[in-house]
Image (cartoon, rainbow, N blue to C red; front, side, top):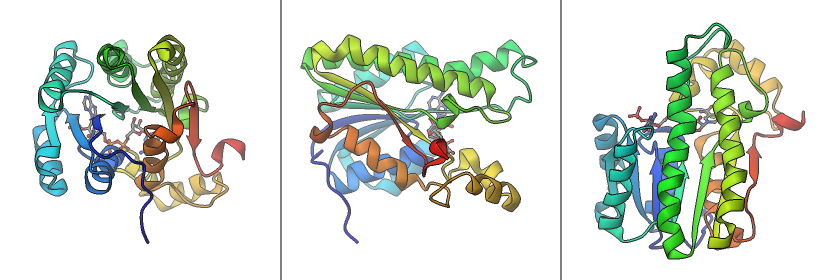
Length: 255
Ligand SMILES: NC(=O)c1ccc[n+]([C@@H]2O[C@H](COP(=O)([O-])OP(=O)(O)OC[C@H]3O[C@@H](n4cnc5c(N)ncnc54)[C@H](OP(=O)(O)O)[C@@H]3O)[C@@H](O)[C@H]2O)c1
């Protein structure tokens, strides 16, 4: 079966957390099928090396180590992108992490800080850096990966839910502030996706079946299910869409 095409050839993307999971699938589609240019980041060098080897995209791909909650890492990420490719057409805020917490009220503040840093603060710092470049260009797209947990928390995910709710609010705030500069800001909110991140849940058959019961389309999402809406939001076809969060959840939130 052929793949959909979004007209993103030669466009320059920054994809955070692109070394595995949903981010890696986004980068794969961009460099392999769209002939886009991509800078991806992650914290661990071995993940970056494995992604570069798997993607085999030559000069169209740059993989840089960066912790997105560190201002100096984010500054370096965007400086290197400009040096390599001269512009930033789209930022995909894909990084997300969780530390399971039995109770948000009882969690220690260091745990709160880590989860808010990697999810919300990192998304803010990257969006801020990209917006400065996009304003000069007079155009750009920012797409963040939220989660349906932003509006419906699950056990162990309280702080993560708060961070994702912040990302959805940030999406609306930036969409209004950056509209005069022709920058569209949107988010995609998946239900559970089969990646390493959620493996502790879906690898247990009983938990898997319980989760699937709440999904009208009757299965968990694969990374590819999330990639297509993200690429659409980065395309010219989405130029009049801004400030929106699209639930990509097999109907879970309407069930
Ligand atoms: N999988 C799901 O069920 C699901 C459901 C809803 C929403 N989401 C969201 O979808 C997005 C992608 O999730 P995923 O399942 O693909 O996750 P994943 O497989 O765990 O991949 C996360 C990626 O982010 C990188 N990363 C983590 N923290 C980082 C940081 N502080 N700075 C830079 N890079 C960092 C990781 O590499 P390093 O470890 O090397 O840094 C990795 O490349 C996240 O925003 C997640 O919240 C996932």
